[in-house]
Length: 352
Image 1: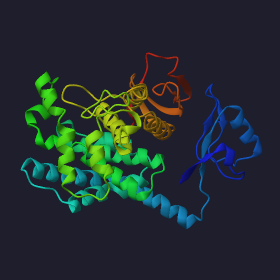
Image 2: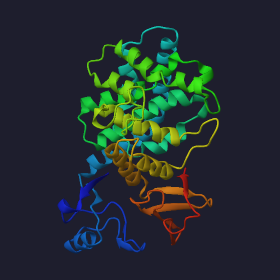
Image 3: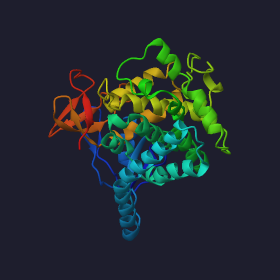
């Protein structure tokens, strides 16, 4: 197990959990080394803000934590599939003009909630589990999961975090009131179809309002998740801080998941390229803070991961690039490749 620690509060005597490299790709501090004052000076001089250190707990407790992490990795795919099935049942009920109950919604989020909190890299699982033929259902669960991760990084308390997950799960419930011919159309929508699809936040708000949820952020988030920071969204055309805080987080998760999912009319986009688009969209469409939190999360979990390059080679991400997220420093065998300067190569996916 390891924890993230700010350089300003990094205690001496702890062991590094990852190799640290300088901007030229040279090894600066090795994984497992005990932190000394000289290491802190090196990190400060090179502008590092935080590092990951090993937790030096008792052996039994450490082994237990590792076991929990292993079980979570094994259980999350099953929990995801069960939650997707729960969404299917709820959307079928709405399509048949039946009300859904609070207990059904809570069970759907409870299936995945604890696993999401305990799993560091949920994106790897989501990439493995997606199937373009089940897009609408899987997208709903994925947005709930991603919203929880963004909310977790924003420091939301447990009650708010779970309610955010519920809002993410339900954000597209209004689509169950729209013709499947429009929902599953493999190409661009015409003006009439697009006008109909834009009604789904209002339909969703009406459906969720009937559940009688205590937290009114949930129906408001369902209503407002397509609003834009510049006021050019729908259905209300509101802007900035007038947009519900849950809705601003869900909008980021919604766009990111859509970009990184296979669709009938296009393949999924590589994760880091999608993050790059999210950051560019934060200049008018998406909330800047939620976008930066997603960026930080993706960059943190990608560092140290094995990835597949567009050349077909397997590489390890060594150093993240916050200015150009899709272009980190990677290592291929014993050689380093800086994707910032090698623009003809890009990261396609996590290695399996």
